[in-house]
Length: 519
Image (cartoon, rainbow, N blue to C red; front, side, top):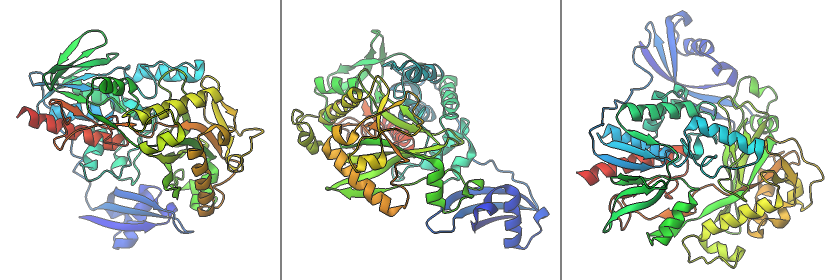
């Protein structure tokens, strides 16, 4: 007999299968020994009240063992003789586009400017060790895209455009833990996601596709108003319709599109800092008990407020994580956050950012025109360069949270997870007032919402600017570019996604549109 049961348990009751069997026996009236297995279908933590609960939907197998798999694998056929489709970029948008193309019988040719995910790891380590950034292999560029080495969180609100469950099943099929199918906020972890990405690449190759690393697209091949392929920086050409999934930091691509008069527009982003607390402090604030971590994962938080008509909010919260250097070129300091699968570090960080619209730009930098499609990109570059001049190489400017609110320089800084190092700096003084004033007001509100959150134990590290793409590449209802046939702008870099899962969903949708294009 199989029973599905909804449970609301104390954390200590939901720690393992043995304790769950005891609860199921109590709820169903059967003997514990008769329960052969318990499978968790959905899991979430409710910490809104003083008593923390774990909400579970489980499937209990009574007098029988599970026979069905935890997920149904996808069949990937041999497409070595299929029609060619060029996929520019091997981030989540590009990889999932390639896998979906294979499902549809089409042959993906993946072209990635950076290195494979394993070689890329060495270049990322060099940023902290030598404080030098390889402009083609860093936290933004390379196999897996920005998400590969910046956490691997899979939570998304983009559930209307495609199947989130399908995306999670593909991750599981390529090596991710099936627990992501149950968790309300699924997370693979930066330590495990690269191996999953390698398995995705292996599947593309087994099915007859191609993957080319260290191969940067230079321009489109055009026949009238149709894109029929690309030319790379080596002069090599690849022919076929193009899925353009280059990510939110490929500024050279945006400039190429602008110079070629290919329709794009400026898009709003959010900018601010990485805010880091001791994880133990966040656990106490969120779980209201000192022993919570015996039974619960590292605590998360989410804050949002309004200030001067713009949103101020936490972004990409990384419990038990690290702050990482995310610059992709010279004279930039950019920070991001990541967590390993265990979420076991002693720090918690998140982006704390302010919403920014294109029309806001001239009020901050008068020399930048809001009419330019590149105005938000230019603002990003200005702020990252300003952070560079207030830091030192990749040593980032930083300030204690309360000191920032009260506009005073921090005389010393707490220990920090950011390995290139931090330097005390008056962020309240040199950050644009449009951002700094709203952050200050947001922090005061968040401190009232959550007692203990506004503290000088917390450290602000500058700057967080790569929350999303500063440009949108215009496309129509069929996901093709509004002017150029055969061009399918895709994912976060095209301005149509905001994270791993939403980019993956958009990649699948673009692949499906290419199949229609061929029909």
